[in-house]
Length: 146
Image 1 (cartoon, rainbow, N blue to C red):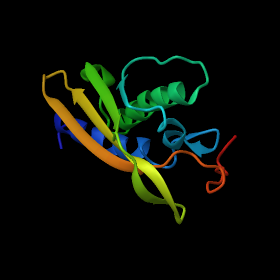
Image 2: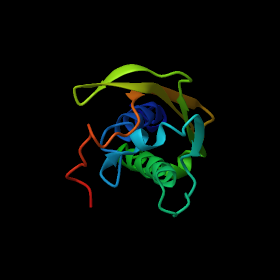
Image 3: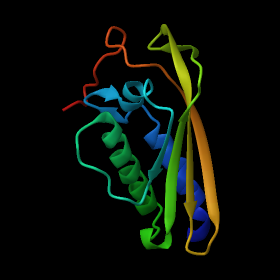
């Protein structure tokens, strides 16, 4: 696979790691903390994010960090990616789903990652996940929390 084509794999791997349960803020899945206020968010994956400690700012910083990690793992030069962004959208209506074996109401959250190579080719990948609002009565704090 040429480095030019590797960008599609980078986006796929980025979405898998970013949307995973390992994306935690203070020991809880960050998207469960954000889903109530999330409607549509666009993140510039190449920008430096704000440092104020909020779940939203954490999610923005984490996106940029995980994208850079995947670019590096693929052996690509980030300078060859002049544009990369992530669009996160939440479905307008709730639906039923399962969280840790408990029936919960939540939303479909769609992640669409796009990157343009320095050759002008645009790559796009998407992933949808069910996200229920954080509920400490059915969710345990991760042991990975610091």
